[in-house]
Image (cartoon, rainbow, N blue to C red; front, side, top):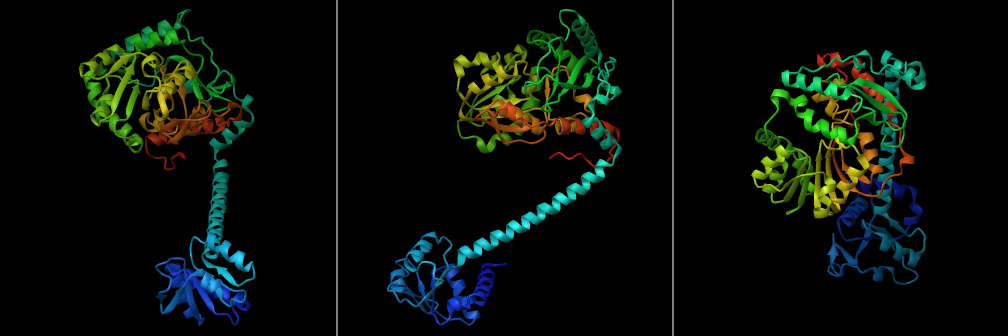
Length: 497
């Protein structure tokens, strides 16, 4: 409905219901503008005569509009026996309302037309929105009722209500997740040799995975989802019963994790296909850098200072330098750092905390692309990152989201996403909640997870929301339908909201 139709409809109803207000009174329209003209045309169509316009604009006063004179407000409103019925046809009419109320009180001799039409439209829109929401809720309830009847959902419901019915020694996701030494990914000779040495090293009394850690929410109560990772390495991937974070527990100490990264990680992960620094640099600059820039573009200003933590050979650093930003990178692998330095980049082989003496509060943007899931001392390391950020700065964080990245890159196989080097696994909900506990709040975030964060007040952990049921149901559903998803015979993709 256009503006004229709205005005005509409203005045038609008003004159029908309040004829006593208009009886025998000349009509003045306050507002010699768009809505004033529409009110005049509507009155003509309704057979009512308007005598004049009222306006505060000095250029309009004394002139005429549609053949009628335009008067100043005091000309029409002056005197105690003023006969005019005033229709206010100005969108921003609070000042006019106060003026009329001061002169006439609430005697029914004026109509705030624009305000009344706006209030009516807002009420109609609210009613329409409420009706849509009610309809959506009914459809959701109907869908949930249908889904609840499916065997997998009955199993989830029974499990979540009675977790003790499941054997505590068995991984919840099934036999594929038992500690049987079986891997699900192919390995070349380099990888097989690295895996053999790693398992032997982890099995020694000194280096066994014996360090138990609480969840980031403080809880020590977990469900065991898996007893191994994709390579068959014995480790427990657990789900916190109180918040829904998925994590590795027990796990290596920080010192042992450093040894693993230095001596086993590259050979195990890449083997003969391990990319030399120059090749990794090329592909990361071609693919990853534009993706990160696309997320940050609207927040960047000319000459922004950028730090990438976990920069490898510095391809992202060079990419942002070429766009006119001052960029720095840090990584723990000296091989990649050396190559980046040979290209003239400012790179350091250190952790974030070691950069503080030189760069505290020094960066507008900090990039953490697949870094957070590797933090051993999560609170301390994230606090160091925050201290490197300027007030009002932004953090870009990318981690493999359970409901996004793990589905596509790991062929709909949750087990394929489990790796010794990954200490945490989040969904969008659990990630945003975790960041909130550490004083970071999302500007944007999706399920993959690609997020832009800013520093704010920390959210108390005691107010946490428990997402464990949602996460458990999702991974159970994923495991149940894994093969049909891989064969593209499963037509209902899990909801990734």
